[in-house]
Length: 227
Ligand SMILES: Nc1ncnc2c1ncn2[C@@H]1O[C@H](COP(=O)(O)OP(=O)(O)OP(=O)(O)O)[C@@H](O)[C@H]1O
Image 1 (cartoon, protein in one colour):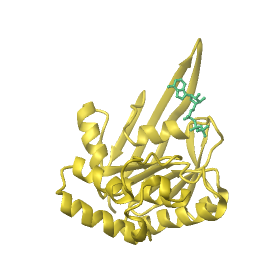
Image 2 (tube, rainbow, N blue to C red):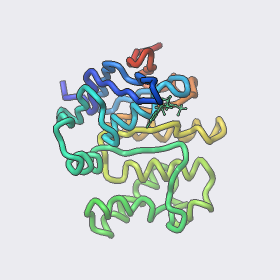
Image 3 (cartoon, helix red, strand yellow):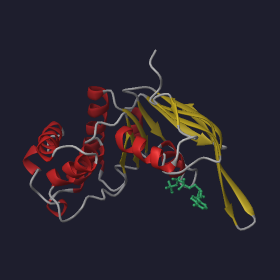
Image 4 (cartoon, rainbow, N blue to C red):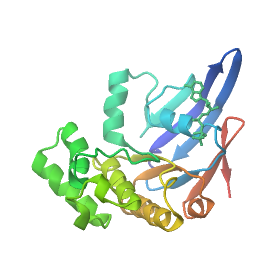
């Protein structure tokens, strides 16, 4: 069996709030295989964003190991972590964070150019991705000219533009109405199943979570599988 795309091994993280100590993650374990979609469902403040930041190498845990495709990251420098993050991990947030002055296509081209790809190849790939996400006809529109669901699907295209192994999404449909949420979710699932991308998606939407391969929650700082 292949190495998991993401592995958390006894990961702990606490914050200080005055004299109080908040134990957000306590010996948390998780393994995500290629092509697997996992919903992270937990109440506000339970630590979903903290977990996604740690899994995405944006934040270091206090203890424990985060491995990406079998590569332990705790011994890596910040530069090494950044390089690994750029090639292996894509992020989608609740708000799309697209650059307003650029078109949909350009928003998907930019991360590829930053990663060193030739502009023409990047543009071809961006167009293919937008076509795949049924946004081909919107490629030349700026974010303000797109609907909320379209903006979020462009944000997904941007997140996977460099062909990451892992997609991390923090309430990607939190701002959208139920029908649009469904459409954005379908896009995520189709991408994961079609390309072997592993996805960890924080969501409050239980109907959408049910369509994913697994569901986990945070309880006393640990990740627990739920039905
Ligand atoms: N840098 C920080 N310093 C201190 N406390 C923090 C810090 N970041 C997060 N926290 C606290 O840790 C807890 C978990 O925060 P986190 O944002 O991970 O929760 P969440 O489950 O994503 O919540 P939400 O669903 O509301 O976004 C919260 O109580 C938060 O106030």
